[in-house]
Every structure is written in C-alpha cells, then in structure tokens.
Image (cartoon, rainbow, N blue to C red; front, side, top):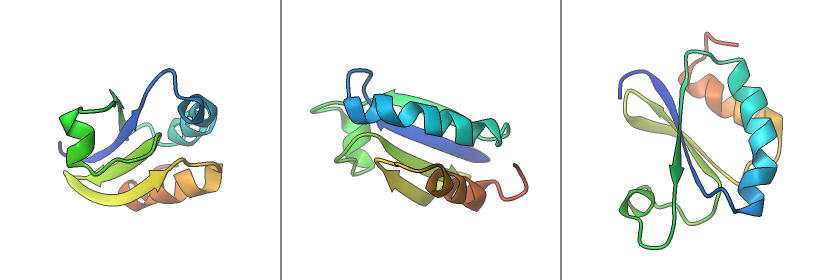
Length: 92
C-alpha cells in the first residue's frame, strides 16, 4: 500500500489488545492521513507469522509498504505518537 499505514495485529478477546485500544485511538486521531488496518491474528494465521508477530497487540507502521516502526504491547501514548511521526511527520 502506498502512503502511511498502521497494521494492528491482535484479537478482540485479548486483554492487552483491549487495554491498548484507547491510546491507539487517541494517537491515531491526530493522524487522519494514516490508514489503520486491524488484523485478527491467531495460531497458524500466516499473515501474522509473515510479519513475525509473537505478542498482541503489535502495531507495524509502514511507509509505502516498508516497515518503519514496530510497537509490541504499547502502553503509553507518546511511544505510539513517535512511531506515527516516523511515517507521517507532517500530520498531528
């Protein structure tokens, strides 16, 4: 995909994923030009394995299809914003 994209791997039943949703949403609100794709991951799912996802949630920040930043179990707003700045520095 062209442009800035965040791919979020996780599941709806994961406690870590649910806890991270408010801070992910708050951070993304300042970056309207960033596409956010949520991928329900699980054992044996090839897409998560191809990105070497081991823990949920994992946010992979892509710029024109290349990985620029990765956050595993983000727990603070600033780390998410810093990752988003790397793919969309003029936003926010």
